[in-house]
Length: 263
Image (tube, rainbow, N blue to C red; front, side, top):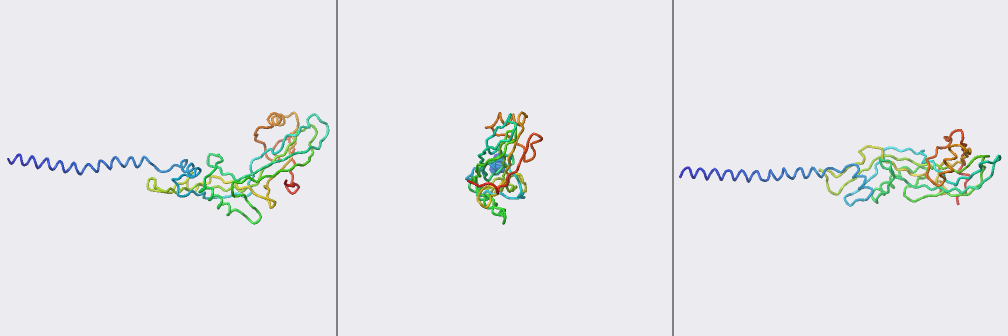
């Protein structure tokens, strides 16, 4: 009898131990599941900010540094006029059209559209960089410059107008605040806190409402690789050298914007 009683007591103790261990085992399963959720990656933060994700409480552009005298890309902004084979200069009419808009460029170099939250932050940051003698375009509306004028095309040259708009280049990073914590935190950065690799380019606008920038007439000697490349690809997007950087076969003459009557 005594042995049987002792045996029953032993089984009861084992059962109690099992009951204590069961919750611990359950916790061991939950912890890896929580860790697998992970924190938001920089790419996820950028994507959520661009799409105005419902997961976000807010998304902000945090400015780190700015360059107010930046120039945009070199663009051909008129058709190409051909005076090849001629031994004399010719006066030609040029129709010129250029436009600018605020551009947001992420770390990869891609220009992106943004949602309401980030767009509002970028607009507010733009207010900070409006100066007494510089007005910048803070929203995503397009501002245009359009005119027609006559200019001289050199003998045996092609000619066209080039344009590079003035802009303020503000660089920084994105700060996203999530509604629900991820790995115990709600604030994440893209690409990282303190980085200056997200750029917002704010175009400069003149008092008459047209874009500010550098405008020039470019003459290119016919029969040269530069001229042939342009004539064979008039309707394609080409990377053109900047003002005064075209080489010995290229002549650039800057046209002051004060000479231009915006239409």
